[in-house]
Amino acid sequence: MDVKIFRAWKHYVPDLAAALKRLQEKTIIAVGMSVFPRSIPSLFLKKYIIFCARDTADTTLLREYARIHYLEQYDPIRAIKAMSISFLLGNYQFQKFVNSRKPFRLLFYSTNPEILKIVIRQRFEWIGNWPDSFKDVLLKGKFRDTARRLGLPTIPEWRVGRPDLAALTFQEIWNRWKRPVALQRADVDVAGKLGTFFIRTADDLQKYSHVLLQEKQWTTLVISPFIDKYSVSMLGCITPLGVLTSTLQLQLVDVPEVLHGQEAAGVFLGHDWGACVWPEAIEQQAQTAVESIGAHLAEQGYKGIFGVDFLYDSHTQTIFPIECNPRFTGALPVYSLMTLAHGVPPIEFFHLLAHLAPQVDFKFVKVNQAFKKRRPFAHISLTPKNITVMNLPLVVGIYSYNKHAQQLRYKRPGILLSDFQSENECLIIDSVPHLGQRITESGPRLFKIIFPRSIAQSSSEIEAEIGEFLINFSFTLRKAILHHQTSVATLRLESPHPLL
Image (cartoon, rainbow, N blue to C red; front, side):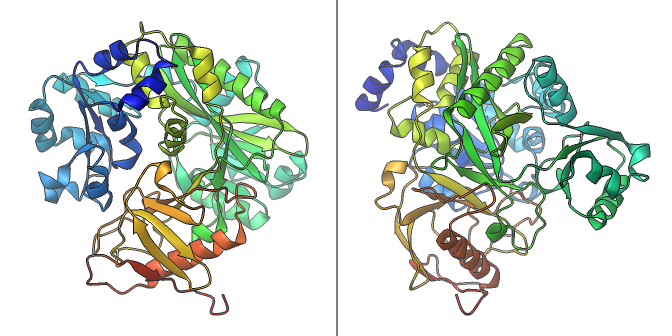
C-alpha cells in the first residue's frame, strides 16, 4: 500500500497495520462471473486473487492493479457454459487452481445453498454469510413482513394468491389506489427484467397474468401502487461497532435510451450520486431504516455489506423500504472508487474486517460521516439485446465524446476517478467483450459507462445529450460489421435517427 494512502487511512483505522496483517494471513480468492466488481480489495491487499469465468477486454488493464485468473485459460470449452458461481466451484480446473494456492479463503459476494454445498464438500475456507442469516429479508414478501415488524414505513400492498389471479380484473386493481400498480412475486426471487410487471391497462393485466400463470414456482403475488420518478438505495455494512451506511443513491431504472425496445419492467441500470432531489430528512429516514434492518440481520449472524432499495414519493415526501439485497450490490465498485478518492478506506475493507478481524477497532463515527460525502459521478449499463457478437474492438479506459462530430475517442487507460481530466470524458469498463466474442443476450448488461458528472433528472430520465450519446453508441454497436483492427482510437457513432 502506498505510504500516502496508508497515512490517510490511519485517521480512520489507528491500528491499520494490524488490520492489514490479519486480512492477509491467507490468500483471498474472490470468485465470480466478472472481474471489475471484485477489483477494489486488490488496491489494498497483496495476497488477493480474482477468479472469474471468461477473459474480457478488461483483463489487460485491470491486471495492472489485480492478479486475475479465469476458467477460460484452463478449460476454454467448459468456460463457455459457465453461467453461475456454483458451476465455477464444481469445475476440476478451478479446484486444482485454488488447491495450489493454499492456504486460501474464497470470497463470495453472495451465497446460496448450491454454493455452500460445494464449499462444504470440498472443505474450502470461505468468507460470506450463511443463507439462514438473511432468509427473512431475501424474498420481497418476507422482507416487507420483516420491515413491518421492525416498525418501518411500508408501501401499501395487496397480496393475491395464484388461484385468484385469473379472476382478477383491471377495475378491481385500479379501484385500490386509482393509479397504475407494480406486480411482483412475493415468494420467489426473480431479478432483472422478469422481476416486476407494471399494470397500467387491462391489456397489461391480461398479458402478464398469462406469463405468470405459466410459471409453477410462485404461490403469492404482491401488488403495490406505482410510485414514479425516484428509485433510491443505500448501502449498509454490519460491523461489531454498528451499521455503517452510505449516502442515499439515485438508481437508474428503465431508462428508455438504454432499453433498446425492451419493456419498462424495473430493469436496474446504474446510479447517479450527483442527483439529490430529496431533503435531508429523507436521507435520515433512509439511514434509520438501513440501521434497523442491519441490526436485525446482525442478530441472525449476518456480517458485512448489504443494500436496501427504497421508493421515494416526492409528492407526499415519504420514503418506503421495498427490498433488501443481502450481498454486494450494483453500486459497487463505483461507490468505493468515490470513497477512495476521499482518502477513506472503502466499504469492502470494513466487510473483510467484520469477517476476519472483528477485534480491530476503528473510528466508527468518522468513517460513517465520510461515507456520506457525495461526488457528481454516475454509471449506467448498456443492455445486450440484439447483440450476439462483439463487432467493435473497444479498448477499456477513458474516452472523450464529441457531440458535434459524433465521435468517441480513446484517450488513456485508467480505472480510478482521478484518471478523469474532464467532465466530457467517460470510462468504458466492466466485462467489455473482446472483438468477435459471443454475447449472451439474456445477460444483465453488455458493459458499463462511468461519467465524472451527474446525468440524471429522475430514475428513468437522463440529460438529452447523454441520452443521444447512449442511443447512438448502442445503435453503432448493433449495426457494426466486424472490424479487423485490434483497436479503434476514434469511433464514429451512427444515429438511428438521421436528423440527430
